[in-house]
Structures are given as structure tokens and as C-alpha cells.
Length: 345
Image (cartoon, rainbow, N blue to C red; front, side):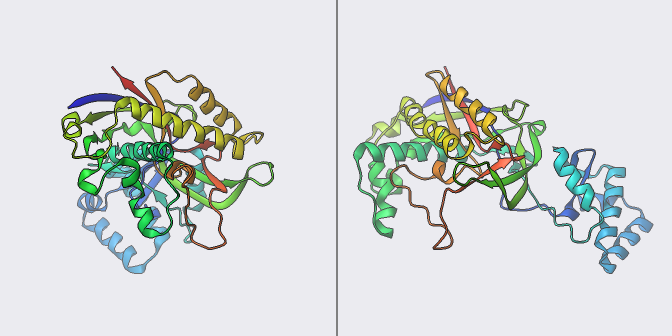
């Protein structure tokens, strides 16, 4: 078993979600800090009078008063499951609508284990797999799959295996990594598009989510993961084409370096909104050492980074919809999901 340590420097804000949502009643924002409310702990802290008052508000269905009562009680007793920083924009949005019954400031949380934010090893492994499958398919000059069955068999042809038990990625294991709570901030993510080389235009789609700090946004964040390669299993010949750590570096460089340049030229070049951030990504990419490569992980990675070169054929929900025509930027400025991976000796 070969073991490698991967140091991952977060270059741009990263969000890996849970599929769940925080509704306005479940959290309080005060002084640019979000406090996730523990109603169970609050109820235990209440005396009989407070508990009766709270139950009376619930029976009346007065959401504004419930929010006010919950906020005051939570801040008084400190009964929060966790607290996390928010951007000034998000805090202002919350404060402007705190007394509005129509307030639907939904927040998408970062994935956590025991309430601690984590980077799943599966997210890193999935990003590596995309790059390797794309590059191996290109080298083999595989024909574009036609039909559902051919698409299902495409990866097995690229990686040279027959069924799931022969998949060479069985030899690759990547552990989850815990990151610091101080590395997380609640941000606004804005969907933008660009027409005919003009400036980026904000669309109506906006999301508020927990995301990491990053080098581009002004505060470094990093984490380390362990990568294990089962060379004994690979040597048995029971799996498909074996690959090395050098293959991982080479394929990821070939796949993701191209995405940085493509996205810059298509969306950011000449547009003041995100050009500086994109140029920093290009500069960092061009100065990578031999043991370093870029990955793009998490939500908002862009269709080109999660589908295969040459064989890319995403299916938008509507027949007339085109893919790859917009991007999601944290605070309207920072591309999402880029990390620099260093393979440590």
C-alpha cells in the first residue's frame, strides 16, 4: 500500500453541500455571525413562563414574533449548534428582512460530520476520476457513445475493466479531511452570463451558502488528505488499467489547466467583475511545480469541469436550453471550487 499526503490550498471559494437547507427560523445572524439554533437546548433552558410564551407564539403562527423571540433567547442563552462568519452582504440581507413575513433567506449549509465541516474524500476522488477517464478516452480515441447502453459502458472501456469489481479506482482511497470552522463563511453566490463579449450580467438566480475562505477572496484556507494506492491489488491484474500518482498529476494538469483558460476567455477576459480573480488563477496555474496540480470540486464547478472533453454531452432540462452559458461567482467576483493540490514527499 503506497500512501501519499496531499496538501490542498483553496484558491477560490468552495461549497460542498448536503442537499438540505437552513430556513430563517432555524438560525440567527448577529454582528456578521450566523448561529444555528438548537431548539431542544433552548427549550431546556426556558423556565415555565418562557416555555408557555414560546408555545403560545407557535400556536398563533406569528412567524415574525417567533423569529424575534428565538433570536433574543438564543443570544441570551448561547444555545447554538454552531456559529459561523457571514459576509456583510448576507448580514445586511438578513437584517433588512428580519421583520418581513415574506423573508425566505434560505441558506445552503456546508457538509459536516459531528457538526464539523469536512471535505469528503469522494469529492476529491471524483474530480480525479473525471480527469483520468477524459484523458484515457482521448488517448484510446474512443468513438463518441451513441445510446444509453454505450454511455453506461464508456468508462469501463476508457479504464479497461469489465464490471464494478474490476474498476481500477478500487485501488485508490482518499480519506475525508476536516477543515476549521474559521475557514467557513456564509456567502452570496451570483449567477452571471455574458453576451457577445460584453460585460458579465447578473441573472435572477442567487444562492446563499456556506463556503470556504480562499486565496482569491483574501483569506487563505487549506486542508490535507491522505491518498492510498493499493499497488498489491493493482498487481494482481484483476482490475483494469493501473495508474500511478504521476498519471494522476499528468491527467489532472491536462484536464483542469485547460478549463482555467477556457473559462477566462469565454467569460472573464475584459470583464471587470471577475477578470482580476481569473488572471490570478491563470498566474498560479502557470507557476505550478512538478508535484502540483489543480482540481475543481464541489457545487458550481461548471459543466465543463464535470464532464469529459470531446465526449461532453450534458442534457439541460429543457430541449431549447443550452449548457455552459453562465457561471456562478461568489460575491459576484470569485469563480468557485478551485484548489491547488501538492503531492508531498
